[in-house]
Length: 113
Image (cartoon, rainbow, N blue to C red; front, side, top):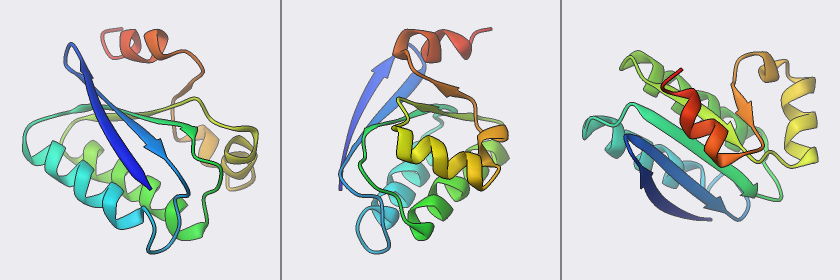
C-alpha cells in the first residue's frame, strides 16, 4: 500500500494505491490521517480508485479514520470507489455513512457547500 498526498485549497486528497488489508495499509492509513488531523487538516478525501481489495481490517480502518476526522470537527469523503468497494459498503450499510464521489472536483467543492 502506498499513499500519496495532494492539496487543493484546504482539502487534502490521499491517493491510496494497493490492497488495504490487515498489516498492509491499515496502519499506514491510520498514521497518515492521524498526522494530518494533528496538523490541523479537517477536510480529507480518500481516493480509492487504485485500491483493488479491502478486507475487514481495512474497512475498519476507513471507519476509524472517518471517526478520527469527525471528532476533530472535520469531514472525510470517499472518491472513485471500485464496484467491489461500493458493493462492500452497500452490504455493510456504510454507504449511508460516507459521502462518496466519482469526480474529484465535485468532492473538493462539496466541502465548501
